[in-house]
Length: 405
Image (cartoon, rainbow, N blue to C red; front, side, top):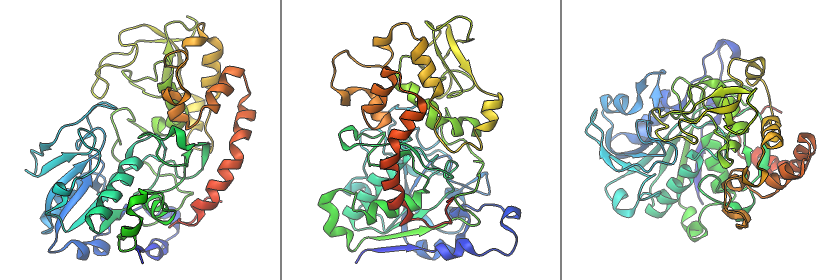
């Protein structure tokens, strides 16, 4: 029988009212997991968000406590979190620690048998933003498969989901599976990494060839303290170069769809995912020019004057912190105003629906068709509900924390 250990009860013990307590990432709950690592050769999946007490890198802290970390695995954007979205990252040596860093967003996305041959236990600790097309849950899935194949135990140090207070969006259909969406979950799935891992295992969504080995796989989820799915958690470190603040993180599930269109999604500006537009949109709209920046060396529409929207600092931006649904109004308005409708969605005319990046982000071809047909936001949202209801029933089985409903 497979072993899933989730010390959920520990997250429920409060000596003060919840509002008065700081949400504690699992990485700071040393007594809950250090005994699992003592005397072991440890490999950790980590990046710049793998911090304790908001600023100290966990790898430095564990090393000082005598934990033997022999290698680091890194996701998209690299160990230090500075690489562009989609930029392939090579293996390296971390100059601060001298530990070898193996990129799982370069030549390989899975840890190989050779990578794991000298490892006793694996640790996973990165900050997610709770959006299906944010690739860290895909990395988690493939890291779990590597652990199962290598017969290694895996410890997930859970972190709060900043978008974990709602579930919304189209649910992915299998033909549109890619690294920006590997499972039939909605765009916003309302789960922490630990909960998501339990679901992958419990629903047998991992590689079918590993189902036999799953029986002996030991997954340990160390929960956060003082967290519920009603919490609003402010990230202490930006999770990637183009999500620099909470406004961008809250709007990302809505405005990332622009990545699959001709419009700039704001990379190369000071407010990615809060600024978006195109040179051919009406000139009475907000004007901006994407330029080369760290994390966006060659942004879409680089050095071109664009017209569109800047919702940073607006009343709508402030409302994003409390909204509990994806907003489609800007996508629909942009399509309405775009003069060349046949080139709004990126892709070759006549290509198969699965070839369009927009459809990979949406997880289906329906949303594109709905936008083209002029369907209202309310009617589009209505079409999502049957699949959302089914997913919510699955999700409930794997929650470690009190839900928002």
